[in-house]
Length: 617
Ligand SMILES: Nc1nc2c(ncn2[C@@H]2O[C@H](COP(=O)(O)OP(=O)(O)OP(=O)(O)O)[C@@H](O)[C@H]2O)c(=O)[nH]1
Image (cartoon, rainbow, N blue to C red; front, top):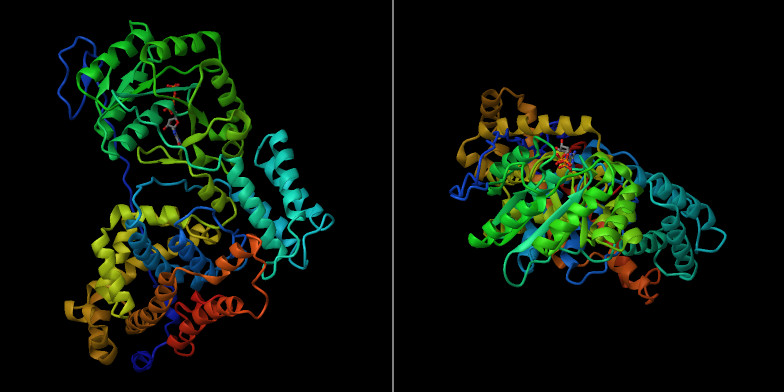
C-alpha cells in the first residue's frame, strides 16, 4: 500500500483541500393554504362528512448509562482523533470524514442490537458560549495535582459566571455551584485522572441531574386515544410544535389527528391545516364561532370515531399569562381529559421560560415542556433551569422551523454537548435513519479487510449527506464546534471536486484503486475527464490507500469497545483508584494515541500531508 503511494510520487498535501466531507441540501417545503370550511381536512384522510370541520478536550467524562460502550468508544475515538485545543487544523477537520464513516457504520451495528428506538437529540449553536466559558474554568486546574478548597475557588467562580451568563436562575446556580464544590473537594486524588478532568466529571454529573437525569418521553394512553393538549404564550412556536409532534408520533407508527381550537388569531387554523398537509396528518377544525372547549370536545369525538391513536389539541396563545387563558385551558382540559399537557416555551426567554413552566403547572397542571427555538439561543439557560425550577421535565426540544426539527430531550447527551464532548449517540441515530444495518455490516467488513474503495467512499459520503447539512452533523461530534463556517464551505466544495474525479473513473478503477495507482495514463484520463490536475487525482488515490489503513486500525479499536482513556477515568471515579501510572491500563491509553499517530505516519509518505492530522497532536 505504501508502495502504491510511493508509486504515485505525489504530494497528497494538495489533496487536503480536495478532501471529502458530506454535504446536504435539505429543502424546506412550501405549504399550501387550507380553506376555511368544514370537516377534518386531510391530504391523506378523506374529508369527514361532519359539518365540523469539552472542546473541554477532556477525553474522559463518563455517561452513566448501561450499554453504551460502543458509543463511548466512538466518542472517545473521535475525541482522541481530534483537536486538543481551540481552533482546528484543516487536516484534523478533514480527518473527521473517516471518523464519520466509522462512527456511522460501527454505531449502526451496535445500536441495531439495542431494542429501544430512541429519537434524536438537539444540535444547535446553543451552549457555544457556555461551553467556551466552562473551558476557561478547567484550564485553571491544568497544573494542579489535586482538587482543594483553595484551587477550585477560581474555577468555581468561572462556572458560576458562565451559568449566570447562560441565564440560569440565581438560586439554581447557587445550588449547583455548592454541590459541585462539595463533591469536587471530596474526591481527593484519583490516580490517572487529572484534577481538571475530575472537575469536568463532577460538573457533567451535576448537569445531567440538573436537567432531570433521565429522558422523559411521551406517555401514550393504555387504551383509547392519547390526547396531547398543547399550551403556551403567543408566538412561542406552539402550532409549529403541534405539527412537529404529529410527525414524531407518526414516525412511531401512530395515527394522528390535530385539533384547531385557536379561534382568536385569524390565521391560526389555516396555519395548522397547512402544517397538517405538510406532515400528512388530518386536522379537525370547526371555524371560529364555537368555544374552544366545544371544538376540542367535537375533535376528540371525531378522533375516537376514526380510531385515531394520538389527538393533538392546539390552543390559543396570549401575550402574557392571564386569567382568561388559564380558564379556557382548564375548560379544554376538563373536556378532553388529556394524557399529556405540554407547555411550549421559547428557549430564548431563558430563565423566564422556567418560571412559566412553574406557573402553568400550578394553574392547570402540566406533564412537561417543549423547549422551542433552541437553535436561536446560544446561552441555554432555559434548558438548564426548567426541571429544577418547575420540577417538570423538558420532553422535547425544537431547534428549527422545519417539521423534523423536534427531538426528545436527553439530559445526559445535552450535558455532553455543553461540555464540548459532542453527541455521538445522536449522530449514530441519524445514521440509522439513512443506512440499513446490512449495508453497514458490509461496509464494516470492507473496512476491516482494508478493501474500502472509491465506490464505498461515494456511498458513505452520500449517506452522510442524507443525514443533514455538514454543519448540523458536525455539531454532534466532539471538538467540531470549533470548525469555522469558512472551513465547512471549503470542505463542501472539496467534496464536489472529489466526486467529479471519482465520477470520471471507470467502474473497474473505482473498485480497484490499484489500477490508478499503477497507471499514470489512467490518472491522466481521469484528470482530463474531471477537469482536474493529474496531481489532484494522484493525491486522491494516495488518500484512499491511507484511509484504508487508518480506518481499519481505528475500526479495530472501536470494535474492541474499550477505549482506555474513558475507561480509566470511569473506574477511577468509581473509587477504584487503581490506574496507577505505568499500569497496563495507562500503557494501553498511550498505545491508543500512539497507534493512531503511527497509523497516520506509516501510511503517509513523507510530506504527504493529507489526512495527517488524524493522529492526535
Ligand atoms: N428558529 C425556530 N423557529 C421556530 C421554532 N418553532 C417555531 N418557530 C417559529 O416561530 C414562529 C411562531 O411559531 P408559531 O408556531 O406560529 O407560534 P404559536 O405559539 O403557535 O403562536 P400563536 O398561535 O400566535 O400563539 C414561526 O415563525 C415559527 O416558524 C424553532 O424551534 N426554531
